[in-house]
Amino acid sequence: TGFGQTGPYAQRPGYDFIIQGMGGFMSLTGERDDLPGGGPQKAGVAISDLMTGQYATIAVLAALAHRDRTGEGQYIDMALLDVQVSMLANMNTNYLASGVAPKRWGNAHPNIVPYQTFHAADGWIIVAVGNDGQFRKFVTAGGRPELADDPRFATNPQRVAHRDALVPILAEMVLPRTREQWILDLERAGVPCGPINTLDEVFENEQVLARGLRVDLPHPTGGTVKLVGSPMKMSATPPEALRHPPLLGEHTDVVLDETLGYSAEHIAALRAKGVV
Image 1 (cartoon, rainbow, N blue to C red):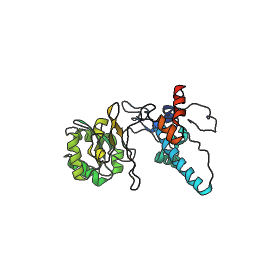
Image 2 (cartoon, one colour; image 1 turned 90 degrees about the vertical axis):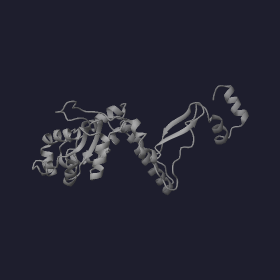
Image 3 (tube, rainbow, N blue to C red; image 1 turned 90 degrees about the horizontal axis):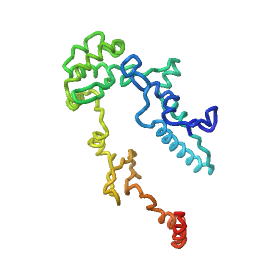
Image 4 (cartoon, helix red, strand yellow; image 1 turned 120 degrees about the horizontal axis):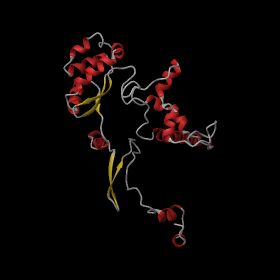
């Protein structure tokens, strides 16, 4: 449910969008308030719904392990709000340790600079400079090695303090080259980076294809159906996509016969009555 089986909100309806706001996620997501476009943003997918499903799976597995040891079952109470609060991870810790609520930083990092997006000639890239050595490699690859010796930018604390002066310089440096060229240059230099892909680019990506995350299966009425493969890679019991999503009622007779043990006459009678 949205809020669980106990507490003053137990009877309220809850939807993912509302939970993202109430649980603090949107206070951390979006551009800084003092920049154009600033303000809270929801995630592009129903993240509290999805994460509650993941947590529910873990809870079910834990309950099964408990059952195997004790023979006892149990009731699992999963709430969207509970999960949304729990999944804020280091942001929760930052607040609980300091008493100061974190704010939105858009695609920037509150404690590391530059660790953000930049617009290249043909699209967006991410540059994640994790230390001073990587910063020197980044600006050297960009033809601006003197920036690494500038006292305002030589160390990460100074880069954080002078973020507003540095980032426009870096943005101007990045803009002339294409995404592909920057990624080649930065990977060669040992600077963590990556493109911001659209979904068509994602499902054409060589790593995504190599990992089997796109699956094409024959379909009895649609020719070929395109599906997303399982992200779970297991050595003994690997998930495998064997058949298309079933048509409406495609397996009704199989379930009634093989699973429930109904006779052909019983199934025919149910069908004649419109039950199945």
